[in-house]
Image (tube, rainbow, N blue to C red; front, side):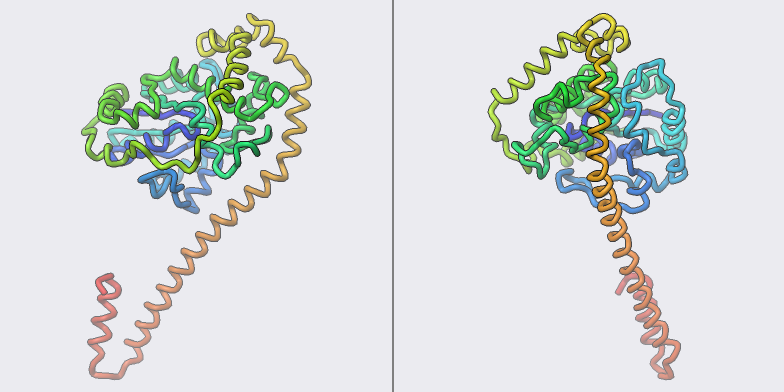
Length: 379
């Protein structure tokens, strides 16, 4: 059995990579086991985003292992987003082990994550047999892609597409530079998260590669992915090639100068150097880095950061509660529409049945034949 974990930031190509494995024989590929609302999405299926090419659904595979949903917790997506190898998170370990154990009838088990990149040291220790594939994307392209309907100049520090603000709430004690008090634009937070993910992903994966390289040289990277993932079976490059668009149409336009990005990136890099992240992150424990670099330690001890967290959480709560309720209503409406369609089919069948039962014609065999054909779906 081959166990494969896919990891990367949001909008980095993880869905495309997961979809490649999903189409391979004797392979079960699970989409985002740590999604906040996984049980809801399994019970009330959603259509795939048009941006995810060649993907129609996300969570069908969980219908085979629904019992595992009892172990799922929303906190998997919101708390303890940074874990070191010696940390304990038994609920998460038991949950992931359950998914794996219920899938052992497949030769290849694939789990695709957007929420384990800063947990990779813990993942490696607790799942030593897993092969980890780390995919990353140019941080500017990733930022453009995450904006969606938000205009570039309208992005404020409370920008929370793909939960970036929630990540800051969860991580601010360990990484205080994610808080608003050290930022002047939300791209800085996005860049910091990208860099943390890139550093630790490169160090803790079996194979780390870029989204752009995979698009440009799919056949070359298919072979590398197969070898590094220890994939068991036929890696059909022709099939996989058909699932990749080398020049996918983007919903966004690159209309910001390189100088604008460089100004913020240079600011971020200067701080990351000063606090020792670039040199030490992923190589030694975080507390050792903080003790070694005085700038980092002073940031961690800055009491203003906690005030930011409380105020930010309060101001954002009502907005997020509204969006969540809207999301639930949309999913439930789709489900009710499907129920109404099924009810209409049942009414039509009952009507045909009544025609047969109440018929006194010697030609009863004709409606009976038509009824049987309808039941078989051949009419």
